[in-house]
Length: 168
Image (cartoon, rainbow, N blue to C red):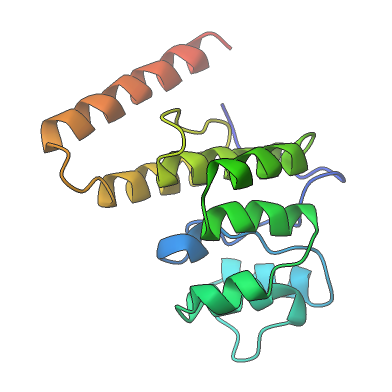
């Protein structure tokens, strides 16, 4: 179980997944003018003063304006996945799974968004950063669940990951 190598048919890498709190931490930056420079800068810890147009959804979410982030969504596959992150519903999950078909990075983000939002009890696998971010957010949003139950679920999940890694 390692990080997914960048392929031509995946989203721009590295993505700023897990960098921000809340939904912004799972948003994907689509390709566009300035996207590659933006994700490089974010990977180095540099937050832009002026965001490129292709990152309007992320910029609004980072500013805490979920309504503006949703309003900035387009119709591309990344937008469909981001819609699930920002407004998780079973219908958005179905659309996001279809949009992510064939792209392992987007598919992992969809799995993480579904897990974090409670639309799925299956934690994501494949990309360590995304998995770690999803687990941390799920714990933070556990609400009234007893701590022992949360820890047991995470322990079971960790055992599954170890078993899968040993089988490779």
